[in-house]
Image 1 (cartoon, rainbow, N blue to C red):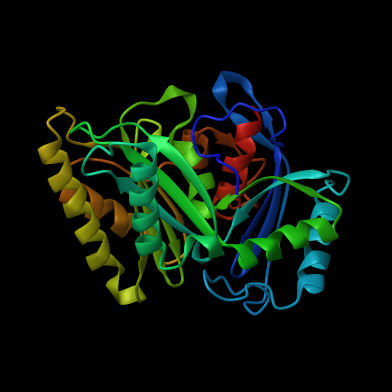
Image 2 (image 1 turned 60 degrees about the horizontal axis):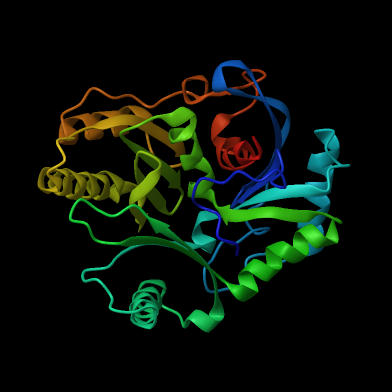
Length: 314
């Protein structure tokens, strides 16, 4: 998996992207609009049977590759994108793991740094690094001057499933990244500063990403039942609030809130965030995030992740 999380400017990255998640597949093609916004030029979504993709970090994800390949080909045909050969791919959230690693002490050498990072990643990912495809990016130092790194891992055999899927269609992958990375792109575009919160829900829980300026501060994937998500969200927000109070940088509030996916009720999420953080935020719409949709029939939640990856082409 390439090193792809920082500010990327590379004309090879396509403006077309595929989004895959349990129960849904989507394709999208963006084009730049005025005022730093983007518009959906072409897009299509399809509700998948839950058996077609079974997202998992450790186990096989695609039971019938030829069936899924046929569905994606039909989606691309319906969207008028079949001739496109270069695509980014948003992976199901459960197929990947993401860590923000903080170095408590300054390593004395590059070999010591690698040893510490290896230990932290094997512990955090729960697998030997030889089994993983890892993207690692150095982040800005924290408020105490400690080095931080973002690490994203996928099991090699799982990643190979998705790469083979694209190859079977005669396509090439520009980017292959987890869903929350694509979605969080909408919170860091256009030079926006300050802290932002992404809550990306699924039928098994949610992933929370808190961005500080353009870099991830906290990434948490929470597996929980529907009745438990409110308590889990409270815990996350209290952790963030306590951390902000000890940062000493004078910034004490969130500036933006984005809520996508299943399981999370937007109104209740808004209430919990504002009660805990003491703000007056509401979930931003696609237009407010900088994406112009062609009509009400297209659901932003279904394309937010692949469309976010497609913005890296601009």
